[in-house]
Image 1 (cartoon, rainbow, N blue to C red):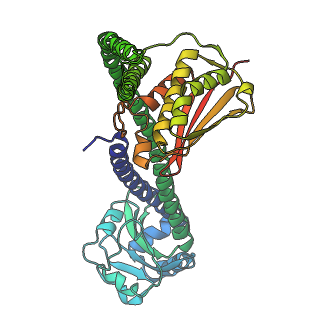
Image 2: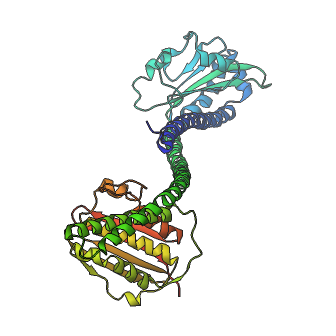
Image 3: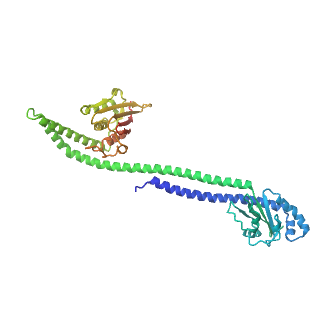
Length: 448
């Protein structure tokens, strides 16, 4: 399988960014929830510390009797009147319930309770379903199973006046809806930010890698083209040197045979014409090959584009008549001049007209249209035929050197056109529909 950098990166980047985004969002959401709920618990602890004076607390937890309980009662009532409080218990150091909003619990000693043990050591403890799944395992939860809303369980240690010893713990169950709503909104914001941030990062990295992949492919293609051109250049030079002289001899012999008036039959003359035509065809191929393989061109000069087109049309006038091709090329005298090399440009149009003849063996119409861009900096030439056209696959490979579907073709006609025009700083595009003909668009720099 051909290595595709963009696809490979897209898969790996998407998985990596998704994992990092999910993990980051989960950790940040939990940290945010913990910070929010613990901050709320600290605010509640400050209220409890202010509502229950240390001297009353010391007497109450020391078993001060009915008088102390009467003094403690209004303090505990203040806790009950706090918003969102649904239940609370007061424990002594032995985990015995001294007071509860559920009278059935008073006097009971609870079994092991990790959060209560931590609170008795002086730690502010908080439990919430936002932080972890709620499980009804504690005895006091039996009174809370029917709650329709989630709640926060807070264990507030009660200190003596020296702030060195814990006298007991107040366990409070609250349903702070506003707190939960704000926390869930913050969590949703974190996840949304992680999602959008991950998508943005993926899009940016994908664009960068895709562009880099295209540049790498283009550079690879340029390297291949240069290596191909180097090989073609050496091959074409050897071919030209080895074949031109024999071709010239063959053509001269055929012409000499034609000049033997009265001694040569019509059939022989026709055969000589065929030989001369095929020799010219081979010579044309060699010339195309040499032009295509040139590593550089001469400095562009001011070239009358209309004159070059007319000269190339004149060269193929006989072929057009032979195949019944009508030529439509109006107002060539008014075509703006371009910056080009006249010989190379002529070779490009010769290749286009040769392709048009091969595309319309039974006749048709060849039209040449020209236009000047609105900024008067570029000239466009459209060479359109009504031939057999090209399929999508043929169109895709139209500029691939030495690729051809024509019998006896070399596959350098259109590549030659593109190479010549691009050398001159221009652009070539092709439009083609099977059975409806082909249009070649050439854009070149205008020259005043």
